[in-house]
Length: 416
Picture 1 (tube, rainbow, N blue to C red):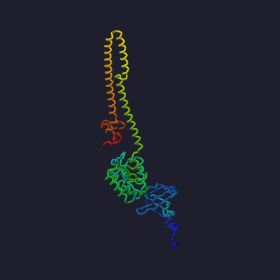
Picture 2: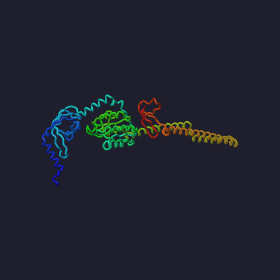
Picture 3: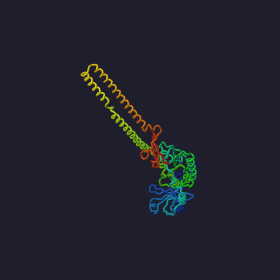
Picture 4: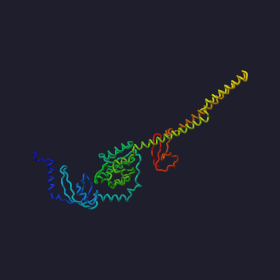
């Protein structure tokens, strides 16, 4: 009973024998469209296809190195070769012995025709493309929930600017149902009105894998979006209609995440520079006020106050001695009384002068505190700056963007 069961290896060897001995498979001529061309270890791999089927194919270096043209996706070729079975994987492929160029394939022609049509309608015009925000609080991501693109985008945003919130719109990104799925996600994101920017992306793949991004209705949905869209489809060499109609084209999903976010390290560096400039500005103001206070002190003789008192006391002693020599005791007492009154009057006068100067000093210090920009900004006031200069009038704003400084940080604003 068990003898009727074959091993996988035995069946594969039998099929290999059938392929190898079939004369019809030893010399096959095909006219087909080429896609997914790639070179690996000296062997050129590609797919031969028409509207109904696909066949894997390969050419060795001694064959493809003699070609007079470069193979590109979408090209139609005439090939001759043999079809054989690859035993380890149980798959069959065509080894191409010769190839001639026949023209452009139908898929590529359809791509060119749609591109030209939409371009004439103005869907690719730069004037219609929406600017990508410098800082996005919310980033919408339209891609597959199971692909590498989602992980690459999420990790890049987390690394560059973790303050951005991500809204994920899971979508089909391959096959006939993909355009409708992505269109639904774009429309939902626009209805939500939460995202500042949208990323539509998927990882690399063959021309067939990426063909859903060449859909006309998808292109029109991207064009109609009120939210700017960044396209990050495939690899750097891949181009789709989605790339041309989006507000910005990135070479990869990771590149799209980079376009959508600022680098937190650059922001911290910029904030440090501005903080130091503000600190130096405030210190300069304080030094100017201290200089004025010092100038006032010297002007009114406060620094020589004790010296003046000592001089007056010395003069008083001299006068007392002189009076003792020139007058009777009573006159001396009367004179001493007058001198004492004079001394008291002088002391009171100086005391009043000192009190007045102290009031002026206190007033200057309070004024200095009131003029401290940080205290003023803490009450809700802001400073408008452009090109690291304070702007005091609306008409002085010459550029499209300027910076508003708050007590606890800065924001950049686009001029309306």
